[in-house]
Image (tube, rainbow over all chains, first blue to last red; front, side):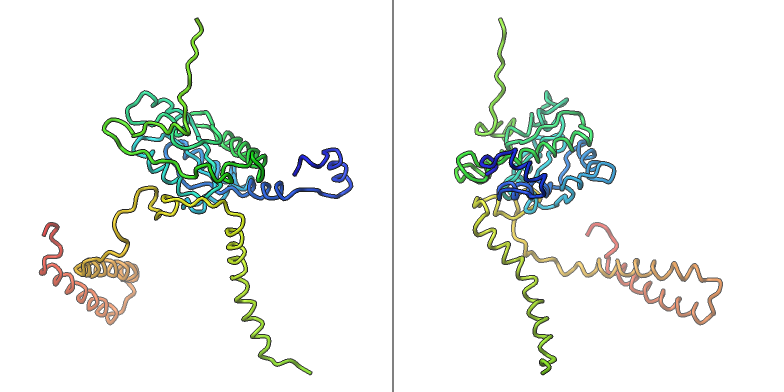
Amino acid sequence: MSEQIDERLRSELQRQGVWVTSMEELYNWGRKNSIWPLQFGLACCAIEMIATAASRYDIARFGGEIFRPSPRQADLMIVAGTVTKKMAPQIVRLYNQMPDPKYVISMGACAISGGPFKQGYNVLKGIDRYIPVDVYIPGCPPRPEALLHAFMELQRKIDSQKLTGDARAVHLQPTQPSEFPVPAFGAHDLEPAANPGVFQPPRIERQS
Amino acid sequence: MTPNPYLFIIIFVGVAIAFPLMPLALAWLWRRFFQPPKPGLQKNAIYECGVESIGDAQIQFRSQYYLYAIIFLIFDVEAIFLVPFAVAFIGLPVGAFIAVLVFLLLLIEGLIWAWSKGCLSWAR
């Protein structure tokens, strides 16, 4: 437990060449530096994701180099691009098929809210209606640096996750769901239009 | 005393078996004690790029597809052999030329056979 060791004592020990750590920190350090994303692009943001993976931006520096073509081996789903209502059930099913612990980066305006196509009839207004999203990246499309920043934010989140106790990470809590219901094609829209356990519509506060 | 010379082989065999088994055993132990146990219907389902799998994987193909294989062979093999033949055409002796002609004749024979069976017509 990092709370139990005095930070000053720790830095003092570090200066003397003694590295003190805990199992939790070691475990999270390993996890955050070996995030394998799911190889999976939807629209133009995927091009930026490819650029991030290629040599110029090189996401491999952060441990994310191995884009897995199968959800069985992936930790991170980068929802890169416009999510159409036709594609949404497949994305939720892919997310369900990923093993725990799993994380989601919602990349670009479309994946966050539908973006420029929000008023359209066939675009999902944000993937967070069906699956929990850890990091959002605004932009249309976001530059590779933005994706790298989101990746580092996710690493920070993983690093701060607890493995024991009541406040432990979601994937370690037995009562928290690992799968989310896959929406079905309805007569006019996806049914249900959102998963109320994951998504609450934003409340509009009017100032009078 | 010198050890039995075959002892090394036994040691090597032991190491060769233990080397792949050890990571598998470690992975099993990790899964047994540390994995968050959250199986589910969809997580355990067949991976089919996100769509639900339909039907069985053990399906049968019609044996009539051998015709397509033969026609592919005729055109593909012909192209592979014709290109070097055409490149070296000037310097070829008469014997080699006749040999290639015989080979072509064999393939054309197959093509005529497939044609007469009606394999080349699109709609049947």
